[in-house]
Structure formats: C-alpha cells, structure tokens
Length: 332
Image 1 (spheres, rainbow, N blue to C red):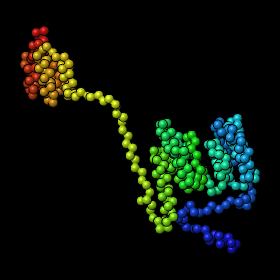
Image 2 (image 1 turned 90 degrees about the vertical axis):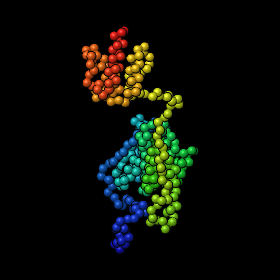
Image 3 (image 1 turned 180 degrees about the vertical axis):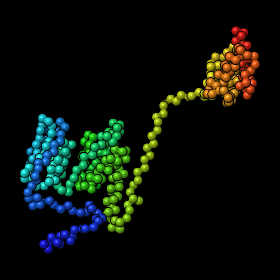
Image 4 (image 1 turned 60 degrees about the vertical axis):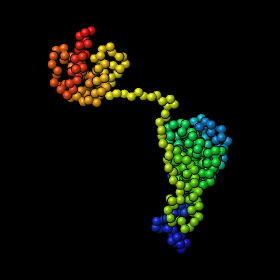
C-alpha cells in the first residue's frame, strides 16, 4: 500500500506544461486477465503488384502477430489481408495496431519497418495527397519536390522528425513517434500547397538548436523562424504577336460612310457632321445609332412636311443635312 501511495503522489494532478514528456504506462497481461468478450477483425485490400512481396513475408507477419495473439489471413483471390483477435488476446488496442500494420504493408512499406507499429510509442499516418492539387503536372512536380534530388529532401525530413517516410502513388506513409508524425503531415501538406519543404526543414533545424538553450525555453521563437511569402503572382499568358487595335469612334455608323466614299456631297457632309458632333447629346437620341436615327427621322418627316420638327431646335444643322439628303434622293 505504501508503494502504491508513493507512485500516486508522484503523478501530476494539475495541468501539464509539456504533454510530450509524459510517459505512457505499459499495459500488461495482468491488467486484463479475463481477455476480450467479443472478436474484432479488420481487413484491407492491397494492389496486385504487392502480391509477390506479401507471399514472401507473410509467414513473418503471422509469426510477429501471433506473439500478440492476433490471427492474420492472406486472401490472394480477393486481394485482401485480414487480422482478427483470438481468445488469448489480452490487449484491447493491439488489434488497431495490427490493422495499421497491414495498411502500411499494402502501401509498399517494407515488413521491417511496418512491424515497428506494434510498439506503444510508435504510430503511423497515411497522408492522402491526390486531391490537394487537381492539375496532374503540378501534382507530379510537387511530389518530386518532396522527395528531392536522389531522395535527399526525404532523408532530411526523416532525420529531423525521427520518422520513416515513404512516398508511393497518391499517398505518403509515415511511421514514427507521434510528435514527428505531426511535423511530417505539416511538411507534406505545405509542399503540396506550393510551399517549398526547405522552409519547414529550416524551421525544424532552428527549433532543434533553440531547444538546447535553456534561456530561450520559455520565450517565443517566432522571430527566429523563417517566414514564407508567396510571390507567385498569376499572370495571363501574353501572345507572341500582338495585333494593334484600331481606334473606335463613339458613333459606329460613321464607318458606314468611311468605308466607301459616296458620290453625294450631302452624304459626305453628313459623315463629317457625325465626326464633329459625336459627343452632342439629343433628347430623342440614345446609343451610338442615336444621331443617325435622328437624321433619318428628319428625312422621313420631310416627305410629309415642309417645316422642321420641334425636336431639332437644339441642333438646327440637322435640318440642313436632312434637306441635302432629300434633294439628292429626289434627283436620283
């Protein structure tokens, strides 16, 4: 009783400053002497190119899982792997670990690395990167940027996070301590969002050096870390040969008379009048065709009346132009 009371007094009761320093207590068979009440099972599919490798190492997989009283089955017809608990299984969480192990094996992680997931202090994370970018070319370039030349970028990520990282297809498999898995996920997601991994790698290196200085443990490290500034401004692609656009006049009907010079001096006069009075406003005119429409109204009115209409009081020169057009039409 004295030993139990001493261990309980050493356990923290209030808030913890650094939860990563806490040690997870080991779960032993005497903690669950009666075993499990129900059978649990998980199954996962694997691609066809992994079939040959799984055949070779499946005996080792069964031997490793049998030490934890887990039964493993390999179905080559359906292309699936299954893990099940037995009556002798005493650890309720080991089936979750076994499920993660067969997931890693299906994602091309070698057996030597996948069996580490059965340890309590080791976790795994399978990051899906296929839907982050829709453009196939950008996806391939950014995925290659994560690997780096000769795999040097991936190796530096592994050294700084203490995790095993494998890039395969549209997923990134990570295996290691839980704190390192968070760092790996952040690096992978930022890289697929067009942020170069060198920024996160440099930040991890700076944090590792700052942790060694006891004076800076309780200070903010933001001023020491690199800040990413997005300088990629999307520009519309310019054509190689630019066509010069001709200047347009306000009155589009002006081109009706400039394309072919009319033999009638009245029409030429009307054309010049449109050019000069392009900015003139009329009460009954609207749009680019307003001036031309008003003049045609005058010509129509001339056939029935000899006096100018009331709406030409602001522009008496329109009546003169309409008169010239009427005279040319009557001559022809």
